[in-house]
Image (cartoon, rainbow, N blue to C red):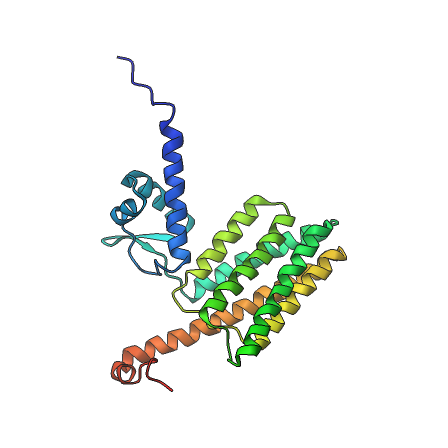
Length: 261
């Protein structure tokens, strides 16, 4: 008996549902609606999207393979939870790929529109510096940090696009997303931090404009290494605080952050 042929529209529709589920889960992780260590429910996601569980399962499988989700025995699928070594590894990967890409970009003449856009994004950091100076507060608040991260991401993404390597861009974007979903809350930047980041970005743009690939690679490497040191310091602080919470829970119950100061 001749097997039934699959309807022509089935495969593309299934693929589009899987991609829809994949993007939806990524967005929930990036927005921290799904935090590190939390379970991911096929049934709940299927209800949210109004689709069957099969494309949800396929999307989750892809995210497990990419390192965003983890399959835990007796627990199912959870959002990956990064440790100190993971953070260092991810930054080293990001440095290797981005520094290579910026060196490649700086070997050729970059068109004026791309250089102007890079400089515009670099100078966007000064907007946050002005806001912080005007507020009189020591660090950017969570809303400002969200906008800062978008501006910073746009700068680095454009650098990768200028290098014209889509595969490298995809890996770097996945790496940055993994760093972002780390459960520790990121502290807001101080004025000195913003000045340093602005200086790094401007120096990279100027090196690309001069086609000085050695300087572009050196500056971007220093920039990413500085960011890594900041993240590792935050991790160590968070780890010490968690250790104290476990050893002195009553102290933290009495002196909660909401009541401090």
